[in-house]
Length: 500
Image (cartoon, rainbow, N blue to C red; front, side, top):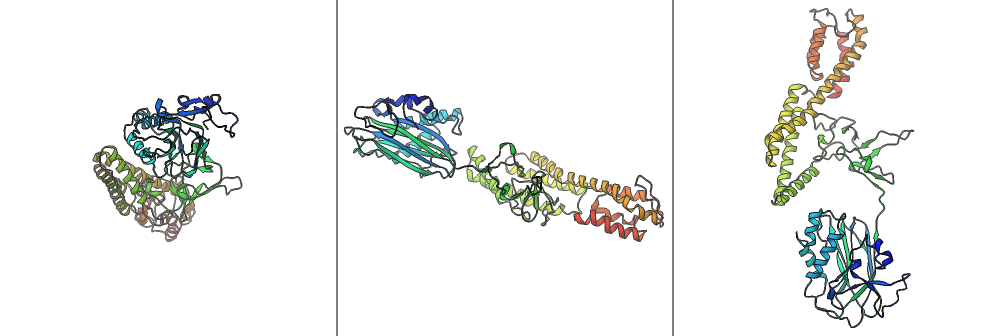
């Protein structure tokens, strides 16, 4: 509220501009305002002394909020309207007030605010065109004095459909201009002020801005794979549909803790690991537990089954378009290049995953081939985007190997360790019962009855291979039917077939 009273000047100047420039004593014949406790000062606006613009405020607004404006006014009957031939003076004042009030409010740095103050970068022409559409420059029945509101989007483009102006009406009495509960339809900024383009003075007072903000129940920010950034989130209610609108499973245990996983219907997802809790039913990737193909920016998985790359293509298209526009090129040309680049990478990545993604194709050679193929895709994608082939090749190859070959190596290591430490101990009784010796270190199976095949040689051969090639070592184990049957049932089913 801008009362214009000097006793409130220090408080009101934190929110409004042009208070000191337009503050004046009540004029002779000014009606008593019974709505306020005391009233000694008003804002006197007249083009005769360069005070065409009165109290002004700039504020951020968000989608769904409501804003109401009101101000009282008074002018005498001998203050006729005038033709408004020159809007340039008012435009200059509006620009200065907008730039001054916009410090730490508008998304502009000091240089951009300076350009705004002098009407550069299209700001002057945009405001001129808007005022020309709202102000009647020919009607002289009454002063050209207005309550004005202008909505801007987050890129500081005027939203004409939401903006407007109301002209003063009757003379010789205290009246009010009101614009009630304007619905904010998108995030942005509001500039509201009062003005008078005539030389005869018009007096404004008690300029009130009512900002009705919705209560924020909860807001969440996430790392790319869905882990909540707890330090900057705000929670005033318990809403479990969070990351990609999926329900978070938590609090189901007596101690208040829970699984902390998201229910994607087809399977559960752990945002702390960025991995699914069950294998991929569609077998889309070389690792069946990869979430969103290891690229949550490009891919969206709506139900835990098939990924959807439409959102990723749109995102890459927008990035390409905005980058092109920033560099002075055509937005849609950049958009098309971004979509094409992302699409080519996604299609060929899918083909590579199909070729090298089978569980039997694990080990160093296939994973290196997988990495090289991804590197080639990265190189060509970089070329299409205007970068270097070598940079794209190295980047994609390293990422592919780190998410494919490295994990395969870790899986094989875990398999070997588990097999040696647990399975051998389990089958020792079978071996001993059938006359096969085995020393304490678990490596030497002794000599088998037929062919005197050294069990240690078979074990070392197994270690050089991976779980997918385990069947190749059966020649060393086929001697004892009971051992083979038990081995095939208990070990292969547990470690190999369940992974295929």
